[in-house]
Length: 176
Length: 90
Image 1 (cartoon, rainbow over the protein chains, first blue to last red):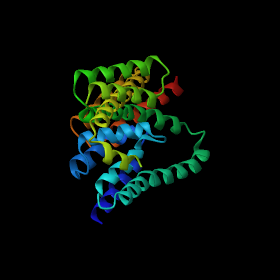
Image 2 (cartoon, one colour):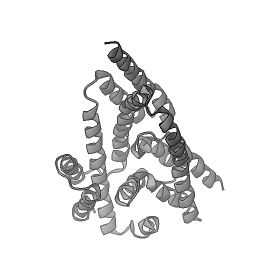
Image 3 (cartoon, helix red, strand yellow):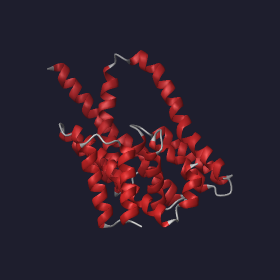
Image 4 (cartoon, each protein chain N blue to C red):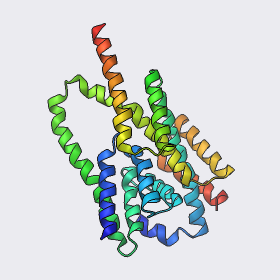
């Protein structure tokens, strides 16, 4: 029961603070689930994040995998609670904002707040790079794979899941 | 389903290698995303400084999300408000 309540508390707080998409909450999520509660290792966290990028839907769906791992006696219950906590609060906030949006659509504050928050969100994305990097494999082959994906992502239109799958192929050949 | 498959097969050397490769790829994607977003912020020194300060505060000082958003998000909003005010006065 304690773990369920902790899952509920951790993921609902992250859900509320998830400005600018899921990447901004990755460092805080790592701090909670790896360092504080030790539900998963840093390597598992990165692998779950990777799986979250591969499956359809938002990346933060990997909260389900963390819930699954956190409650080994009832993994499906853990996954369901973590997923609901991750998405219900932010969905409710979105519904609230939608009704406010019509009222404040002409207000200059809308653009000021949105543009003003952007640099902090980008800084959080850099922190996500740092966090994910801590659990990613450290070898020349892995660094070259990451570098190649950066170049392909910025220079071509190959979609993200395909790039990850190609990296998986490299992993089978060189990172076992 | 992904969870069940992961815990059943993650220790298989081929699956483990594939997961490590995928993790390297996901890191590359996130890094590429960070570079793209930072490029969009390059026009203002305040924005670039806030990107760097937020990244360092969270990565190295492990600052929690709420104060990060309050301090660095708040500073960004203040900067944008001043810029908008200057723009409308000019």
